[in-house]
Length: 115
Length: 116
Image (cartoon, rainbow over all chains, first blue to last red; front, side, top):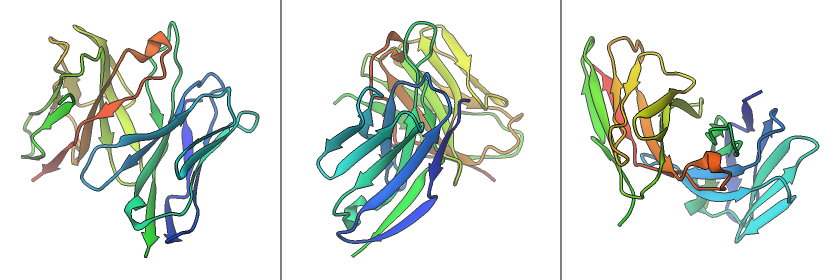
Protein backbone atom coordinates (compact mmCIF):
# COMPACT_ATOMS: atom_id res chain seq x y z
CA UNK A 1 0.00 0.00 0.00
CA UNK A 2 2.83 2.38 0.80
CA UNK A 3 5.03 1.56 -2.19
CA UNK A 4 5.88 3.79 -5.10
CA UNK A 5 7.26 1.91 -8.10
CA UNK A 6 9.48 3.77 -10.54
CA UNK A 7 10.69 2.83 -14.02
CA UNK A 8 12.97 2.61 -15.87
CA UNK A 9 15.95 2.13 -13.58
CA UNK A 10 18.21 3.80 -16.14
CA UNK A 11 17.64 5.85 -19.27
CA UNK A 12 19.88 7.10 -22.06
CA UNK A 13 18.60 9.92 -24.26
CA UNK A 14 20.19 11.96 -27.01
CA UNK A 15 20.52 15.70 -26.55
CA UNK A 16 17.31 17.40 -27.61
CA UNK A 17 15.21 14.30 -27.05
CA UNK A 18 12.39 13.68 -24.57
CA UNK A 19 13.09 11.82 -21.33
CA UNK A 20 10.14 10.04 -19.74
CA UNK A 21 10.14 8.48 -16.27
CA UNK A 22 7.11 6.71 -14.86
CA UNK A 23 5.84 6.04 -11.36
CA UNK A 24 2.91 4.06 -9.98
CA UNK A 25 1.43 4.07 -6.50
CA UNK A 26 -1.12 2.04 -4.57
CA UNK A 27 -2.32 4.25 -1.73
CA UNK A 28 -5.22 6.36 -3.03
CA UNK A 29 -4.89 8.64 0.00
CA UNK A 30 -1.61 10.08 -1.28
CA UNK A 31 -2.18 13.75 -2.07
CA UNK A 32 1.22 15.17 -2.98
CA UNK A 33 3.57 13.90 -5.69
CA UNK A 34 6.98 15.55 -6.01
CA UNK A 35 9.94 14.76 -8.24
CA UNK A 36 13.47 15.19 -6.93
CA UNK A 37 16.70 15.57 -8.90
CA UNK A 38 20.00 14.36 -7.48
CA UNK A 39 23.51 14.91 -8.82
CA UNK A 40 26.34 12.57 -7.77
CA UNK A 41 27.52 13.15 -4.23
CA UNK A 42 24.77 15.68 -3.51
CA UNK A 43 21.45 15.61 -1.74
CA UNK A 44 18.21 15.51 -3.76
CA UNK A 45 16.53 18.80 -4.62
CA UNK A 46 12.87 19.39 -5.43
CA UNK A 47 12.32 19.70 -9.18
CA UNK A 48 8.55 19.90 -9.57
CA UNK A 49 5.48 18.68 -7.70
CA UNK A 50 1.79 18.08 -8.37
CA UNK A 51 -1.40 17.55 -6.41
CA UNK A 52 -4.05 15.05 -7.59
CA UNK A 53 -6.62 17.72 -8.43
CA UNK A 54 -4.77 18.57 -11.66
CA UNK A 55 -3.73 16.31 -14.51
CA UNK A 56 -0.65 18.17 -15.65
CA UNK A 57 1.86 20.70 -14.37
CA UNK A 58 4.58 22.30 -16.44
CA UNK A 59 7.64 24.25 -15.34
CA UNK A 60 9.98 25.13 -18.14
CA UNK A 61 11.15 21.94 -19.83
CA UNK A 62 9.78 19.74 -17.04
CA UNK A 63 6.20 18.44 -17.02
CA UNK A 64 4.39 16.11 -14.64
CA UNK A 65 1.46 14.16 -16.07
CA UNK A 66 -0.90 12.67 -13.51
CA UNK A 67 -3.48 9.93 -14.08
CA UNK A 68 -5.53 9.54 -10.90
CA UNK A 69 -7.66 6.63 -12.12
CA UNK A 70 -4.59 4.62 -13.15
CA UNK A 71 -2.67 5.71 -10.03
CA UNK A 72 0.28 6.72 -12.18
CA UNK A 73 2.31 9.85 -12.74
CA UNK A 74 5.23 10.62 -14.97
CA UNK A 75 7.97 13.16 -15.51
CA UNK A 76 8.68 14.42 -19.02
CA UNK A 77 11.86 16.33 -19.75
CA UNK A 78 11.61 18.12 -23.08
CA UNK A 79 14.69 19.09 -25.11
CA UNK A 80 16.89 17.06 -22.76
CA UNK A 81 20.36 18.50 -22.13
CA UNK A 82 23.61 16.93 -20.88
CA UNK A 83 23.21 19.03 -17.73
CA UNK A 84 20.01 17.09 -16.99
CA UNK A 85 22.10 13.94 -16.45
CA UNK A 86 21.27 12.98 -12.87
CA UNK A 87 19.22 10.57 -10.80
CA UNK A 88 15.51 11.33 -10.56
CA UNK A 89 13.22 10.19 -7.78
CA UNK A 90 9.46 10.30 -7.67
CA UNK A 91 7.76 10.40 -4.30
CA UNK A 92 4.33 10.52 -2.69
CA UNK A 93 2.94 11.56 0.64
CA UNK A 94 -0.29 11.99 2.57
CA UNK A 95 -1.09 15.12 4.53
CA UNK A 96 -3.64 16.10 7.08
CA UNK A 97 -4.61 15.28 10.63
CA UNK A 98 -3.39 11.90 11.79
CA UNK A 99 -0.82 11.61 9.00
CA UNK A 100 2.88 12.25 9.17
CA UNK A 101 3.31 13.70 5.69
CA UNK A 102 6.42 11.56 5.27
CA UNK A 103 7.63 11.04 1.71
CA UNK A 104 7.66 7.57 0.16
CA UNK A 105 10.27 7.44 -2.60
CA UNK A 106 10.52 5.43 -5.77
CA UNK A 107 13.67 3.46 -6.55
CA UNK A 108 15.21 6.18 -8.72
CA UNK A 109 16.08 6.55 -12.42
CA UNK A 110 19.58 7.37 -13.60
CA UNK A 111 19.33 9.58 -16.68
CA UNK A 112 22.21 10.08 -19.08
CA UNK A 113 21.82 12.65 -21.85
CA UNK A 114 24.37 12.15 -24.61
CA UNK A 115 25.70 15.23 -26.41
CA UNK B 1 22.12 31.38 4.08
CA UNK B 2 19.49 28.99 5.35
CA UNK B 3 19.95 25.31 4.82
CA UNK B 4 20.80 21.90 6.18
CA UNK B 5 24.33 20.97 7.12
CA UNK B 6 25.45 17.40 7.42
CA UNK B 7 28.82 16.40 8.77
CA UNK B 8 31.14 14.79 8.16
CA UNK B 9 30.94 14.31 4.40
CA UNK B 10 32.85 11.03 4.62
CA UNK B 11 33.02 8.72 7.63
CA UNK B 12 34.81 5.45 8.17
CA UNK B 13 33.74 3.01 10.85
CA UNK B 14 35.46 -0.03 12.19
CA UNK B 15 33.52 -3.17 12.91
CA UNK B 16 31.77 -2.96 16.29
CA UNK B 17 31.95 0.82 16.59
CA UNK B 18 29.11 3.26 17.04
CA UNK B 19 29.30 6.42 14.97
CA UNK B 20 27.19 9.58 15.02
CA UNK B 21 26.21 11.60 11.96
CA UNK B 22 25.39 15.24 12.49
CA UNK B 23 22.48 17.14 10.95
CA UNK B 24 21.79 20.81 11.68
CA UNK B 25 19.20 23.10 10.06
CA UNK B 26 18.59 26.82 10.38
CA UNK B 27 15.35 26.88 8.39
CA UNK B 28 13.16 26.87 11.51
CA UNK B 29 11.56 23.65 10.28
CA UNK B 30 9.56 21.49 12.64
CA UNK B 31 10.12 18.13 10.97
CA UNK B 32 13.39 16.37 10.33
CA UNK B 33 14.13 13.05 8.64
CA UNK B 34 16.95 10.59 8.12
CA UNK B 35 17.11 8.53 4.92
CA UNK B 36 19.47 5.84 3.79
CA UNK B 37 20.34 5.59 0.10
CA UNK B 38 21.65 2.42 -1.52
CA UNK B 39 22.09 1.90 -5.27
CA UNK B 40 18.86 0.81 -6.94
CA UNK B 41 16.80 1.08 -3.75
CA UNK B 42 15.88 4.73 -3.64
CA UNK B 43 15.66 6.53 -0.32
CA UNK B 44 14.48 4.55 2.67
CA UNK B 45 13.28 6.30 5.83
CA UNK B 46 15.20 5.48 9.01
CA UNK B 47 13.71 7.87 11.58
CA UNK B 48 11.72 11.08 11.58
CA UNK B 49 10.78 13.72 14.10
CA UNK B 50 7.89 16.17 13.88
CA UNK B 51 8.65 18.00 17.10
CA UNK B 52 11.40 18.43 19.67
CA UNK B 53 11.80 15.51 22.10
CA UNK B 54 9.71 13.21 19.92
CA UNK B 55 10.66 10.91 17.06
CA UNK B 56 9.25 7.92 15.24
CA UNK B 57 10.77 4.86 13.60
CA UNK B 58 10.75 4.69 9.84
CA UNK B 59 10.92 1.61 7.65
CA UNK B 60 14.49 0.55 8.50
CA UNK B 61 15.14 1.77 12.07
CA UNK B 62 16.87 -1.37 13.37
CA UNK B 63 20.49 -0.67 14.32
CA UNK B 64 20.00 3.11 14.39
CA UNK B 65 19.13 5.63 17.09
CA UNK B 66 18.33 9.34 17.09
CA UNK B 67 17.68 12.22 19.44
CA UNK B 68 15.87 15.54 19.03
CA UNK B 69 16.84 17.73 21.95
CA UNK B 70 16.83 20.94 19.89
CA UNK B 71 14.70 22.03 16.97
CA UNK B 72 17.81 22.65 14.87
CA UNK B 73 19.55 19.32 15.43
CA UNK B 74 18.74 15.70 14.66
CA UNK B 75 21.83 13.47 15.04
CA UNK B 76 21.79 9.86 13.87
CA UNK B 77 23.82 7.16 15.59
CA UNK B 78 24.69 4.06 13.61
CA UNK B 79 25.21 1.36 16.21
CA UNK B 80 27.18 -1.86 16.04
CA UNK B 81 23.85 -3.65 15.73
CA UNK B 82 23.49 -2.34 12.18
CA UNK B 83 25.01 -5.20 10.20
CA UNK B 84 25.33 -3.47 6.84
CA UNK B 85 25.89 0.23 7.54
CA UNK B 86 27.86 1.16 4.42
CA UNK B 87 25.60 3.63 2.60
CA UNK B 88 24.91 7.26 1.77
CA UNK B 89 22.92 8.93 4.56
CA UNK B 90 20.70 11.91 3.90
CA UNK B 91 19.08 14.25 6.38
CA UNK B 92 16.07 16.36 5.41
CA UNK B 93 13.78 18.89 7.02
CA UNK B 94 10.43 20.48 6.26
CA UNK B 95 7.62 22.42 7.80
CA UNK B 96 5.38 19.92 9.60
CA UNK B 97 3.84 18.29 6.54
CA UNK B 98 1.05 16.69 8.49
CA UNK B 99 -0.56 20.13 8.65
CA UNK B 100 -1.68 19.59 5.09
CA UNK B 101 0.80 21.90 3.38
CA UNK B 102 2.53 20.99 0.13
CA UNK B 103 5.83 21.73 1.74
CA UNK B 104 9.17 21.06 0.20
CA UNK B 105 11.59 18.75 1.97
CA UNK B 106 15.09 20.22 1.90
CA UNK B 107 17.99 17.78 1.91
CA UNK B 108 21.53 18.06 3.19
CA UNK B 109 24.55 17.08 1.11
CA UNK B 110 24.79 13.66 2.69
CA UNK B 111 27.32 11.61 4.63
CA UNK B 112 28.94 8.60 3.02
CA UNK B 113 29.63 5.97 5.66
CA UNK B 114 32.01 3.12 4.95
CA UNK B 115 32.83 0.20 7.20
CA UNK B 116 36.51 -0.71 7.14
